[in-house]
Picture 1 (cartoon, one colour):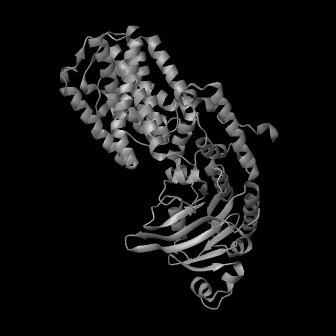
Picture 2 (picture 1 turned 120 degrees about the vertical axis):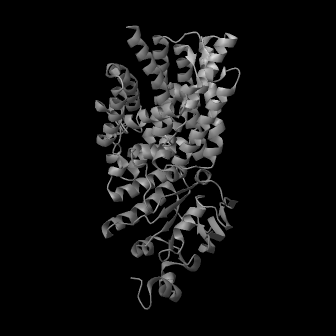
Picture 3 (picture 1 turned 90 degrees about the horizontal axis):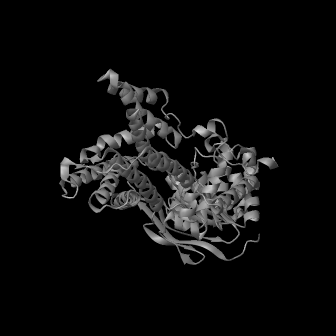
Length: 287
Length: 262
């Protein structure tokens, strides 16, 4: 039971990070191969705060999320201002993410590559579920807001978006910061669940897995990537009996999704749209 | 809406070079408030480049863009939009995977001042604003006869209606100058006549000045005055439809020898 519980918690933690990346990639149309670094920043910041300074857990979580957001500005301002095309941006942030990991490996306070053991395990299922629920709600509200609408417009056509009054640079940067905050929160929860973190947990491989969940779940969807993220965490665990073949199954699943549903599980739609209309129609009654 | 002699907009010595190519070369023209000014010229004359320079998509090599006697040269597109210039595109640029309503609500939202935290928390105020904007977006769609398609995804609209939706989206920025880049491209004669009426109607209803690029001569000759003729990036002629039609330079450069404009 504990084992299943821990998988559910891990999946939910991962879902929070995927939710963030979905805002950035699925709704703003920019690819990133470095978001695991923001998870790492959140994990280390919050862990250091509770471990060395005995800061209360909720505050440490918030600080971790904020730190991830602040760090994202460092890479976001120069690259997004230069209006790098999506693929170039993905490479730039890949380099940035790896550089951050190297920094984590060489600092004293992070205990270097050996990792930070003995972090208090404050993360419980109710805490994670609460964070995930609030995260989903806020993401939904964000995407309906002035800024979310602008993000989607940029994904659809950056030039037309600008001519609709959207500030290209500021909007993209905001989207990056929001997504980094989600990843930071996810990292804080992860650190206080595993009670041990190490720089190698936040590498390109993890970034790729986040991106794979967003793509396989579907661009422009919240529910799709959440489902994909859950499956990608749960499936390898469920298949543990099959030993080495489980990673083959994981890869095969990804390939099959891309072949048969190139738009992803829920591309540009939500679960809820299966049974109700998503768009409010103010004038419907007048027709 | 009367055409005044007041200059709403002028370009002074506008020049745009792409490496060696002089796409626009010291081009100057004015747009009177309330007019429907037409820009015509052979393919590659630099008409769309003028639009791109005016709206800040390109930075001019030299020259000035004045709007309400304010220098707006080189402003970012979103700033230009805030000054009151909106445009449509020659190759339609809609937010394809969004509904018509969402296409129009995007510019409406950008004009509002919203509280960031309020929006994230979904406060009643934020919800009310969203509802108001949807109502306004719907009214705009209705003004262009698109209300039936409000919840249809933009790229599923027929071509002609996509052009109308682009106009609706441009009007949502509440412009005083509307730039239309070949609004009748790909339309049949019947649709083109409908568009001519629509443009005249839009000018009255939304009190906008219109500057349009077009290749459909009937449309230009019917609704535009004055007409500016471009060739090789420079001003070839300028005047009323009749003046332009009988200008020998225009006839030679634009239409070939000896042919009448009709």
